[in-house]
Length: 342
Ligand code: KG4
Ligand code: ZN
Image (spheres, rainbow, N blue to C red):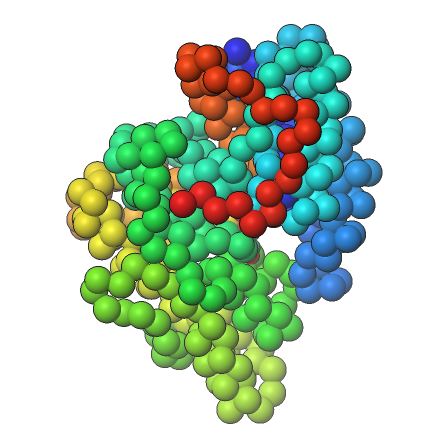
C-alpha cells in the first residue's frame, strides 16, 4: 500500500510517500527563516507560506519517490492539533488529491504521528519499540507522558501544566537574545557550558507526580539576567544555556523513567522536536541503561514536524478501517486545532 502523507500543522510544509513501512520520499519546506525575525511563528504568515509551498512540496515527494500519482492507494493528513489556517491548507490539498484520484482519505492526530514515528525508523543504535512503551512527546506545543499499549491504545500519564518544554526553551532563548528557535540555539551553545553553574528550579519533584511545569524556569532565568546586569556572552552564556537546559532535561528524564517503571514498560520512546536535543538524548541513554530500559528515538528528520510520520500512521489507520469495514473520512473533513489525543 502506497500512502501519501501531508503535514502542515505549524511552520513546516511537508509531504511524504510511505510504502508498507518504508519511506520512499520525504520533503520538508521549513518556514523558520520567515518567522525568525518575529521571534516565533506568526500564524497568518505560516498559512500563506503553506499555500505557496504545498504544490511544490507534493511535486517533490512524487519526483523523489519516482511514483506516479495514480499509484497512491490512500492519503493521510494532519487534522490537528495545530494552527487552524495552517491545518486548512494541508487538509484541502489532501481532500483535493483524494477526491481527484477517488482514493480513501484519513485525518490523523499530529501527536500520535510523533509518538509512533519510531515504528517507521529509529536513529542509529536505537531500539525498535515494542508494546507497551512509555512515550515522551516533547515539542514546541506539547510535553506529554503517554502509556502506549498498542496503536490506538493510549493513556495519559502526565502533561505540562503551563509551557511545553520546547516553548520554555524558545522563550529562554528569546530572553538571551538568541535567534528563533531558541531550543536549537540553546542545544548548540550548551555543548561547551557548565550545567551546574546556575541552579534553576525543577518543578513538581514529588515521586508520584508525572506532570510538568516550566514557567518557573523562565522567571528564574529572568531573575538571573537582572542580577547579571548585562547580557551574558561567551562562557557565561554557554553556562547559562547549559544550566537552563539541564533543568528541563533533568525533569524530563526523571519523570519519564519513573513513568516507564510505573506501567512496567521496557521501552521509552521520545518524539517531537525537543527529542533532537543532544543533552536529552545523552541523559536518557544513560538513565535507560542504568534502569535496563530500551531507548527508542527516531532519526532527526522524523523528530521535528514531518509528513513521513503522518503517512506511517495513516497506513495503520487505513488498514484498520479496511479490516473493520468502517468508513474512511469524508471530503468535508474539518481541522481540529485543539484536538487532544488522550
Ligand atoms: O515538533 P516540533 O518541530 O513542532 C511542534 O510540534 O512544536 O518542535 C519544535 C520545538 C521548538 O520549540 C524547538 O525549539 C524545539 O522543538 N527543538 C529543540 C531542538 N530542535 C528543535 N529543542 C532543543 N534542542 C534541539 N536540538
Ligand atoms: Zn510536532
